[in-house]
Amino acid sequence: MPTLLLSMHEEYVNEILIGQKVIEYRKRFFKDSFQAFVYTTGKNGGIELFIKCPSLIQNDAVTLAKIGQLIQHDQYEEIYDYFMPKNDGCIIPILNYCAVKKVTLEQLRSVMPEITIPQSYLFLDRPDKQKLLAYLLKQECGTEKDNQWEKYFGEIEQMLKTNK
Image 1 (tube, one colour):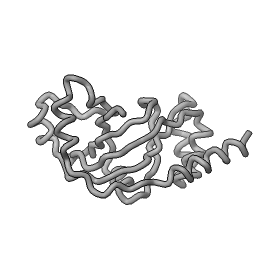
Image 2 (cartoon, rainbow, N blue to C red):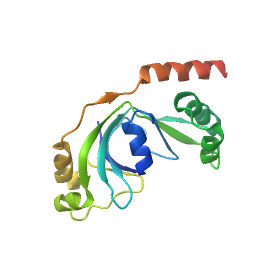
Image 3 (tube, rainbow, N blue to C red):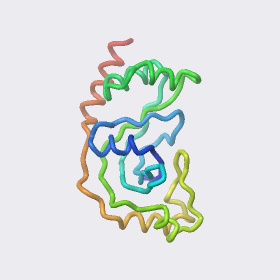
Image 4 (cartoon, rainbow, N blue to C red):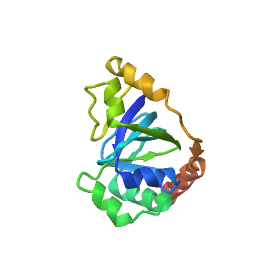
């Protein structure tokens, strides 16, 4: 499974860590299943979260907004407006997650001085990033928590059948 480094705003990282956020919205993203270290953006940023995700759900703005409203109780209009300019986008289901003892940007740069935090994501399992990946994989992860995606996938399937 590919390992990514991706960035998120602090509020979303916190929502994942309390089990409130089970969906990440992106206009474009890597299509296959993956695991990722999540870098919290901002002046006190760092890696504090590790997630595992299946293949993304790609669809039109209406369908993605309905899924977001159903699963995460997000505002339909906000999701629709986010995806509507291209009428396309994706939902990344967060299967499970665990907290990681904070790894600061300085710590990352002590392992890989040229690292820059991506706006979206970067692959850590590339030859030039092996040292950083090995370092991150040695970090202690808290208790892994699962989201209820078997249930959510069933709800999505039922919603899509009903809307046909």
